[in-house]
Length: 66
Image (cartoon, rainbow, N blue to C red):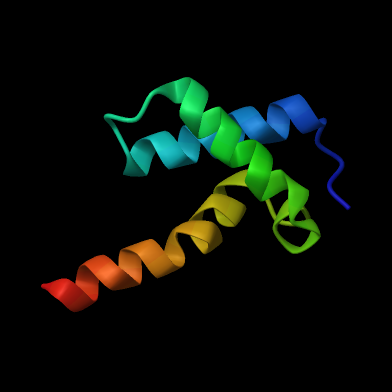
C-alpha cells in the first residue's frame, strides 16, 4: 500500500490528469483521481504512474483513430 497520504496522492494524480486534459475543471479531475485511488492496484502505484495507467485506454484509442 502507498505510504503517501490520501489527499496528497489524489492531488498528485489529479495534476497528472490535468496534463492530459487541460480544459477539464480541476475539481472534476480530483474526483476522478479519487476514483482511481479506490482501485487497490492503481493506489499501490505512484500517482503519476496510476494516472498514466488509467489513461492508457484513452490514449490508445486516440492513437488508433489517427
